[in-house]
Length: 176
Image (tube, rainbow, N blue to C red; front, side, top):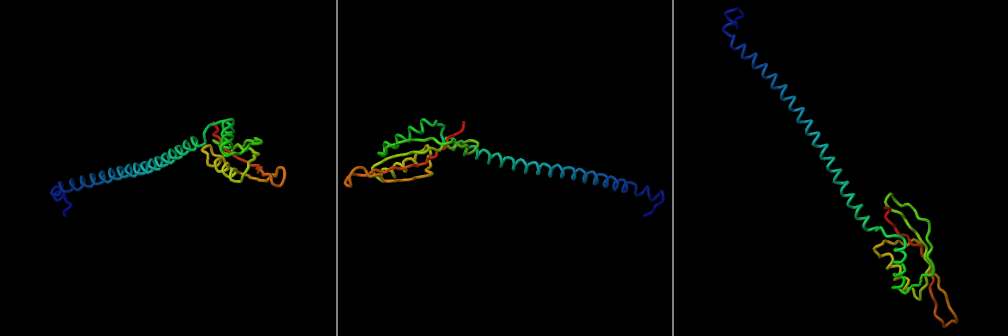
């Protein structure tokens, strides 16, 4: 290559094309880098939004479960619950001698635990077992915490006996 004026003029178009190619190559590289940064940024945002959507889906599922529990643990008041226990006792030939409400407890933010003691009397273990089974399988959700059974003989040896039972029953009410 000749670096004189005559040599430079001969390669003038080649040098200009080479400089233009370098400038456009550099510009294309910068544009590509800028675009790649935007693409990576958008991919990160997409992943973040997908995680948010997954969390929102989980929250929605939990909310549906909470609504289901809320419907399961109905909003009945204590009077209705006690009358339900009375009708279950009548159906199973069990006499309720006393009902003693105990201190209500806060169970969760949405539930309150309402315990009470029952003193009942019946003629057979079968009736007592049916009463307890009916109580615990009832949709109002009763849980037996304590059971104390004693037999009572009445009259002479040939007279029949009765069963007396003390029970602690807990139910859960929706706090609302």
